[in-house]
Image (cartoon, rainbow, N blue to C red; front, side):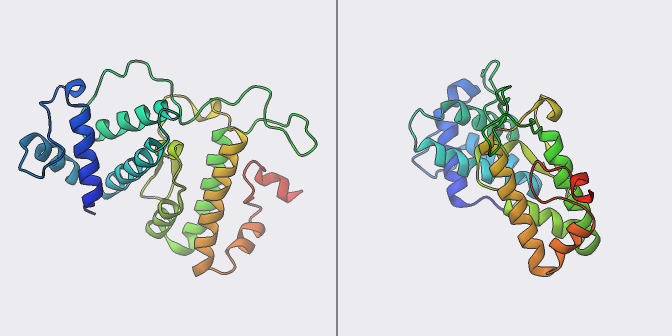
Length: 232
């Protein structure tokens, strides 16, 4: 995989804007000359594995989308920039950033349909559910296809920048906090459900009976519903 011209230019512009904080000489983002600093950084990026380049491209697209909203998402944007520069082996003095991508849910918990507080859904629970689905899919499609399906169906939401799909098709979260300590908001639960729906639908194109196989294995495709509930 190679970086697209848009991604190249966008990274060049960010380097120009953050050159002083990064300890780099100013970079002229308006020209396509053979700027040594930019070329050195670009070479580092081009040498990254395809999975990392895919992650970088996602970060750039999310940064571009959030930047259109003025200062509303400044904390998200700062977090994305930190991730992007880290991929390039660069760092800035961000200090102790609050991680905006995976906020702790208010301890009152999400509300169920009756308006009462329901049990909290942790990220660990959802990742376990995802990986149960992934394990079954791998029996039929193999690791490489499953990993690609997870990547191509991942929603373009800023907080998914913390998620990584391994070569074996496992979903992990690169976050300083334990996934057991991270509780999802209603919006995040819906986003996780959208990702799972997209993955199951993609598998169903090749395996029309995939949903049925999940049911037979008592694996839930409703985010937050434990699989053992299906066996009752």
